[in-house]
Image (tube, rainbow, N blue to C red):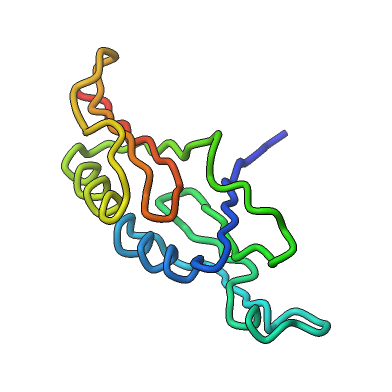
Length: 136
């Protein structure tokens, strides 16, 4: 049996902005994107140009996201984090700094007791990220 986990983030209305930031900061590539206007049925005008589903390729992984429909409760982005494993400390620091813009660094990148460079932040969309790079 093979299983792949793909984190899925729901945004209230700024998924398109998050996609652009993740493309720039993390080198993400859009593999698939659909907008609410592409769905069947009567879609409210203010929802039509929002993201219904997006699959972003980051390295060998997929991050999926969307703008949630207005009737979905907003629970924020609390209680989970997305952990990223790097093999290049300079690339990790560059991605960390880019995602930190407009957000909040909760633990600056530093040497961790387990032999890695490690840092944590919450990006400007409220998504919590953990960065880890084992040191040789």
